[in-house]
Length: 155
Image 1 (cartoon, rainbow, N blue to C red):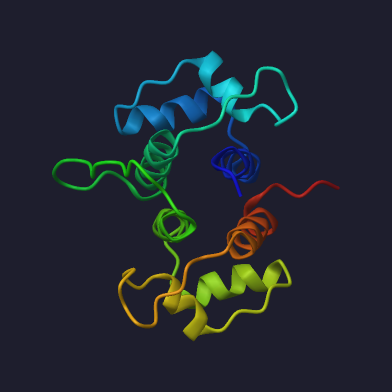
Image 2: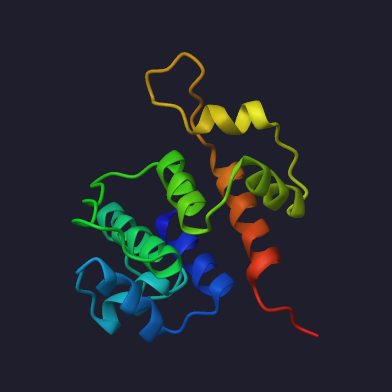
């Protein structure tokens, strides 16, 4: 799953317009122009499409945490220069203030069965013997579950 896909899904799920998306980047002092944001949100086959760098997506996720949970005391955490699905999932867990049970419920909304032990393995340190990399399928289903839970329902 690409950063662009995840950004588009989060935008749809939260019903954010471009101005709101830019303000989320501003929470962490990461300057993004409207044209740049539009190119990141464009579909893959669109000629305006540009790949969303890991650092930019990490800054967006950090800004989303501040948007949804409020700013913490002290300096903002530095954005990662490389992302993987485990980090993205962890940041989404923080942003949406979820515990394991809540995450499993969201995965269940997307008809994706996952155990608490499998979920905890995704949040372990990379060197830990029970660590498991988060596959695209898990992240995709988690984002789908978020969409089913938070996106406005159409009649």
